[in-house]
Length: 363
Image (cartoon, rainbow, N blue to C red):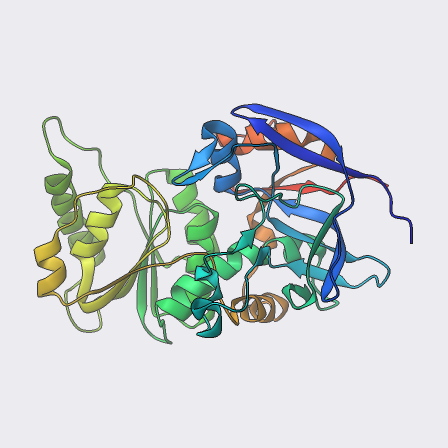
């Protein structure tokens, strides 16, 4: 079969993008070719645009952006959500069921691998998840960030019914972590953010309680600030170190040093702290308290086995409304405008951005 052209949105360097005509991706014997229809923009996409790197992942050659996508399987017509990471399937991590840690992972829009903001993207057939009839392609694109929330809350965090969770950062991933906890019948979902509008949305979406931290005082170091704010948060929200009023699980989706510190201060004795947000590569942590509380502190990286399946199940059953997060939509030719909207946090309409979605190239 002869396929159409493959227009792609390419990052050429810091703040340098272009639309390029790329060759149609090759399809192996166990792969499918997907015509991408919807792509959500992620903070990591914007980070590559602005800084050209994230940690050790450095853009050294032109790279197609995008990794939160859904589309139609070419020649078949099946609607699918794309899990955009191809692991080797042979290493110790893959064989032990932790393929997200594969050293040879080929992940969309992570240097040097191209992403999904193009007409076509190929991937292993088992990583193209069929969407139920009651789910749209827009919702399918958000299965990627929802899977991040499921991996951190349900999988690594071991969150159970009637437990309490506190989530630092009310951006898309933080909100989806809250939504996962709510879908799992949380007793309490506490949202913490420095933007009042985001807290208002969090309360309407999944949070039972919200907290707006005060500003740091002049000459106050970060640890002292974090202690003070943690005490204030516990007093205002009735959070205790043990028992029914304790916080079982803390998720940091902000990456901010003070939020990580606060999370360690407020989580219950014997509780769990999961780090999802990426921030500074080195921070100060109250390690003695971590020991004395015997906390489980773990990083969460992308998603693993079963996370996409659960994401689709919860969304299709109406237990998580991912479409409510979509605030801005753009045609493919306005991809740069979409990125700038994500970058500034305010759309052309003057409204705050939660999630922007870009259409695939027009026929």
